[in-house]
Image 1 (cartoon, rainbow, N blue to C red):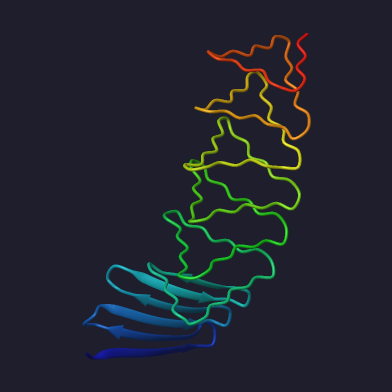
Image 2 (image 1 turned 120 degrees about the vertical axis):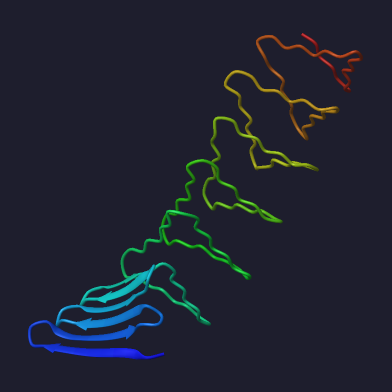
Length: 195
């Protein structure tokens, strides 16, 4: 493979290094004009460019690959990662996402969180709001708290093959109209008051 190499020097335009690969139809160019350093690799179908200024470095290419044992990226101000296609983050070990202030996770259509075990903890308050909210346990679902309040603006339903309602101290069942109904209805107690 024969390469054609050219060096151009100018007091006004700076220096240009050019390598021509006639067989591979590739042209490599390095330009230093006193303000910007530009590295260009141009082929028949694709072109990659690295542009360096005093305050920025820009890389433009079809595929950008970084391989290293450890990668650290830090910014003193803002960081943006954006993809017009699919954005994927994979880790074979533990992955951590942390913010010293607020964190927002938003999906325009559907948001899925999945794991063998799922734990959500808040030191102050937790709120789940939706037009329709479903909490399901295939084996068992438990809701507990120092004080528990279940409220329905129009209607509240509690239904199962067997329902047990128990209080260690006092139980009150009140309503403008209250109905206790069953094929067999038992009212028991050492002292029973009706009316």
